[in-house]
Image (cartoon, rainbow, N blue to C red; front, side, top):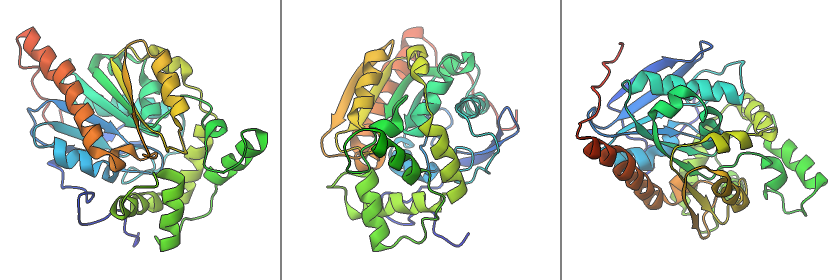
Length: 318
């Protein structure tokens, strides 16, 4: 592929990982995984959203990897993970479990962060024993559990059947996005980011989104249009914080408020004025601070209370 898949300079250029590996999911799907930071540092696992890749987390991996072990992976069909015929929320849960099993030691607990479809991945995995064994705490960014198309505000129409029908077709379009032009940047900013988002933020997101194959974008859009993970929210027993942007057109704040109301152990909702759907890119300081708070409270703090340094690390390939 000749198309540039991410920016190569500035704060949103992805840093080089300490190591890369391939994890095989339950159905044989191969997932590209990156590990940043010291091997003995407290772990953070990042699950990106629809049409994105590990590059989306550049602002998190760059800052957190100084003193955290940051694990990021490409969802199937995205980034460097090959496409798979199995595109379901159960497959997303299988993939997350596989990443946790391969990168964390037995009994090792991490903060798990999901943005958009990554948050839905967490909800889909919430009742899985392996997820529960490894999830010390969760941060959900710009996500929802159901009624995604009905609540989306991408099209400036009155809520109802017509808007839902048109939104579903726009989001699931098979049309290639083409090169990143000034017009493409304006469209992406309107649909996914807040009005005050800086040009370098928009450029970073556009490079990532435009690199997603149109067939992958279409297939996962159809899955998300039928999404119903309300039961998964109720099963998410780990302490969970939620972040949303007030200008999010893809998953408006109504979703975040519903999550807080349904979560068994909510840690509060942070609403970011004027911020759009791409909260980890648009407000990296806030998102990084939330992750650090969760690590301190539920990972390093829990280790200190237990009087242990945590389980031994798994050697690659074991």
